[in-house]
Length: 481
Ligand SMILES: Cc1cc2nc3c(=O)[nH]c(=O)nc-3n(C[C@H](O)[C@H](O)[C@H](O)COP(=O)(O)OP(=O)(O)OC[C@H]3O[C@@H](n4cnc5c(N)ncnc54)[C@H](O)[C@@H]3O)c2cc1C
Image (cartoon, rainbow, N blue to C red; front, side, top):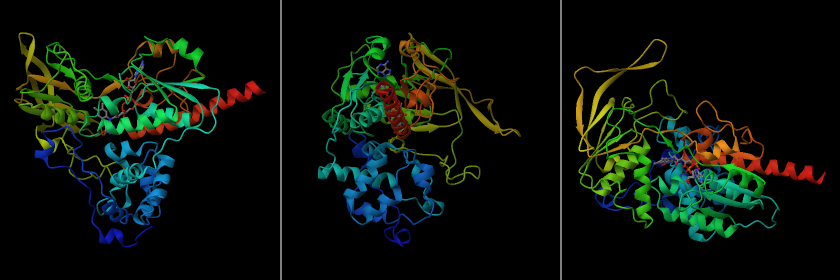
């Protein structure tokens, strides 16, 4: 522990965001970069708390947070980086866009503001890049086996990096034009600049990972070909099936899934031209975003930057409390109202609003019909929803974005042809090594756990990589016996 009295001397301070008026008109990262000196002071706030819940209970990667906080406080950045990279393959992603589950369970958070762990993590890895310490790490010895990874989101990238560094020949296939999954095509540029994704891909290529983009496995490449060609396969195709809103008027033009909208804007940022007939653009429009989560807030920030006339984000659930409820004690993740950087830029939010239908003119949506609802909790602890009489209304809308989450992986040919078992929710089932019901085929990330977080996809990727190595070791032992 660096400074025993640090948590008493220093208040939490984070770099914060660029001014709204400045950031609302461009696509650059909204968050200011952390400064090394400020982060050394912040690291001094980490206490010698005995049981570091941040590490054990908060972080899915089990980052050894107190230890690297101590090293940062002492200015030993290189050692802090080495320690961080032991558990976190891509801190430059989590340092920018992780909700920081660790901070929710920081012991200091019991009666003060938690340590600024996410920003310290980002400072460590960016210090590493600036110093030239983040160099490619190709394996010293190559193994004969090849591994195919299907999907280049955070889960697939972790599997590929880990196995390549262990000497396997890894090829990553992705249907999209460029690698990164949701990191590239979902999360907007203003939250995660794509140069950060490109920088990691370049490192991985320099280490020997092969990327084959624009290849839909199951259509352009048969799973049988992959089975013959590769000693093991990892499925990391994400949970891409969006939840629909099956209400009257859903077929009207101007109603789109959030990911289709966000993907287009990210493609534009990448220099692609979207044909006019396909373009989804909020410019000058009255936008309604249905779904109060992070994807909805990304739509809101994107629509504001595109010049929307107005943006309303609605949510069927009640507004979360400002502070933890008694039923949500520390160190559980705080279920509280969160205002993202986009919410601070404009737009309006409403809770307890149930969408009932869309109405339109000449085949185009003009309004959303909705009603307010009330939530009650029964004696069995279950919540129930009832419509409030007299609250039915029409909300004008020229563009509606459905951001109500995802229901699981796309049921394309790949899953059927490989014959992997699915659970009741339609996710790919796996064992403790992340192997599916078919020997030699593994799964990681949202495809196996359902839509979640980047940090969890990365943690899954590590398990799958270790599982694949163990599996291939066993196969090779059998062959040489
Ligand atoms: C809009 C949005 C914003 C988000 N923001 C955050 C955030 O700020 N912080 C956070 O922690 N999490 C966030 N998430 C969640 C997070 O991005 C996901 O949990 C994570 O990306 C899942 O990683 P993955 O590798 O499992 O899949 P994905 O990132 O979905 O990648 C899957 C890849 O597989 C490819 N693929 C699928 N099928 C095939 C096939 N048959 N052949 C070839 N390729 C295929 C796809 O093209 C895709 O590139 C966000 C999600 C969304 C939708």
